[in-house]
Amino acid sequence: MARPTAKGPLITIAAVVVVGLVVLLVNMGTRDPSGLPAAAVTTGPTAADRTDAAPTTAPGTGEAATEDAGPTTVEPVTGGIYAGRTAGREMTIAIAVDGERAVGYACDGKRVEAWLDGTLSGDRLSMTAKDGTTVEGTVTTGQVDGTLTTGDRDLAFTAESAAPPSGLYEGRADVRGVSARIGWIVLPDGSQVGAGKVGDTPVDAPELVLDGTTSLDGVPVTVTPVTGEAR
Amino acid sequence: MSTGPGGVDPPTDPTGFAPVPASPSRTGTTVVLVPLLVGGLVAVALGVYGRVHEPTFFAVNIAGFSSGVAAKAWLASVGFVLALVQLWSAAVLYGRIGPRPAPRWTGGLHRWSGRVAVLATVPVVVHCLYALGFQDGTPRLLVHSLLGCVFYGAFVAKMLLLTRRGAPGWALPVLGGIVFAALAGVWLTSSLWFFTTTGVTF
Image (tube, rainbow over all chains, first blue to last red; front, side, top):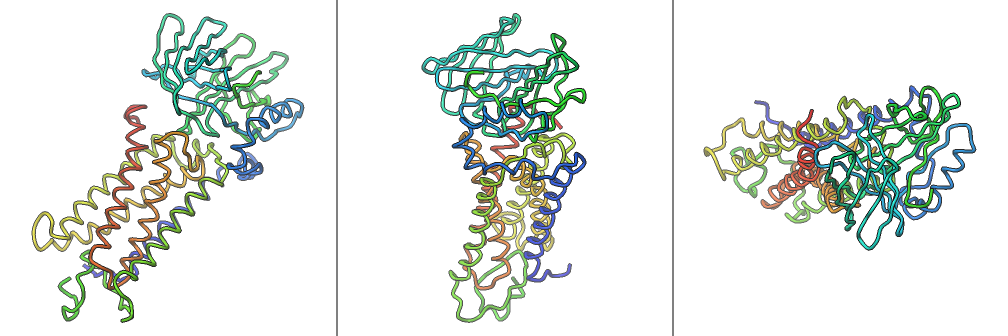
């Protein structure tokens, strides 16, 4: 066996750097087919800035998106956002808490979805949806544990604190005169689960992209991060 | 080691890397200092990049990962299994376990399993840093983010130390141990967490 030279470890470092750069470029380059620069979402303030500013500025961004017909960059919000799954992975749930107010969304990624509304009293979380789905839970540091009751099923869940860009997003669109509403949950591991309705008809959620190019059946969707604030 | 010139050298480098002639003024500890400094800078730089860079998160669905996060978990697991090979081969090289003297191939095994291990983690860390960033929302995320930075810093420090001669005997095992421990922690707080919460999926 040829004895390695002392350059071996340096070559190893160089190989790691080269592979890393190639993967990074692939990451950035694959966004080009949409015609958008990879930096489309980096035009906002830095993550550090946004952590402070987002709770107040994000809803404004959402309203601006409603007024502008064109694509608008959506700022992910921060704050008391929790996301997770039920123990049996039947449903994915996201909860946004702001003070004593809480809103949430639960869906199975296909046809079952519920927008929830409720309150936080102490550490007790209680939310209900129009279809009778309820969520009861306990909020602790960085986590919500609780039970999601939908139909006749009681599903235990744990939701972890979700830092941007993970969290809860709501999409609105006008599909040929019929209003559509879509919910997406982006989990802390980066995966997204969503569902939606056009009128009363359930539809598959389109892929959520945060640079304003989310579309449903070719119709642009206005995406707003959901916080606990009044909607 | 058997090729150490004249037997006057401190015992170094059982991995078989040829030592670089050192300037006589260097003492053992200062030889360690520069790799440690560079490694520390690497760790801090990665953390700062992860914190400042705007997470893009949609890299999730591209970047060559057909099955997204599961692919990350498996790649990281490949790295971790090879890290166990690293631990074993290092112990053999140092004569702690197995045959003595260590078989000739253990040096090659240690080097190449290490290279493959760290290369397997590269697509994962690029995704972590580019798409998700440094996060501290939960203890798991904080520990994972910190250890991820420590891992690459310690890796760079260890590689640089290998190219230097005259380092104290403890330096290489300690740095190697930090590299292994950091990767183990990173794996426990990501892949194992993923497999236990999501199930063993491909």
